[in-house]
Amino acid sequence: MPLLYPLVLAAALFGIGLYGVLARRNAVLMLLGVELMLNAANLNLVAFDAWFGDKMHSGQVLTLFTIALAAAEIGLGLAIILTLFRALRTVDVDQVGVDR
Amino acid sequence: MNVTEAVFLLFAIVAVVSALLAMTSHQLVHSALWLVVTLGSVAGCFVVMTAEFVAWVQVLVYVGSVVVLVIFALMMTRQPAAGPSAEVTGNRWAAGALGIVAAVGLGATVTAGFRGERIKGQRIGTARSIGDALFHDWVLGFEILSVVLLAALIGAIVISRSGSEH
Image: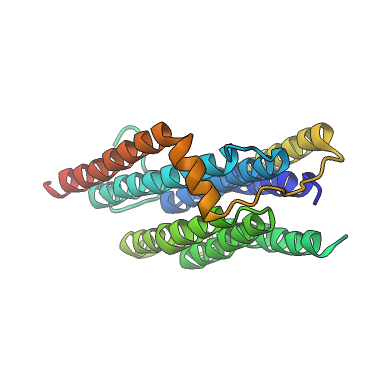
């Protein structure tokens, strides 16, 4: 399999995730965009691991670490968003200014 | 084109289309469900790239728990009067242009760097081989990661409790 297939797929997913983070108004869906970008990075790690044939399986082990970190990140992020919602009754990032 | 490449391309197309739908859908719960399709297709890509254990972890952690958490959060933070057109900000065209620039730039870079390289897949990432690597060569990172997870867990509890007092 050409190495370019997973790399180009990862680039496309990263672009879509970046659009989601920048364009979505709901804070929970911004977090989904971050997850998509992390998945693009995971795809790169696994592709280069399979291409290089590493004896230590660096890419796949680092992918496992990234997945665990993403789980921790989404737990903390959702806790912050729920606290924000309780305080301001909204999760619209345009209505949450620095002055409030 | 052999069967492996055809299966990978199928998963890739499903992943890109469902990611686009997840990031543009006006129904919030539909976005989360399209993200399930995207993450499942990426897990399929992992299997094709001989990383079967990573694929199962992806299915368990992402599809199993992260998306369930997100759907819970979407239901708990439901806005009473959210119009269907109010889901994207005003700068969505700039965001779309930036996303296209990032994707094309990254794609051009990897195409220039790795054109013609092929994945042979001589080391299969089974649970046994990944476990060997994880507990022989990567023990320190594994332990640090468990401390980070514990800190995130305690942090989430503290943030939720301090928000409920007032």
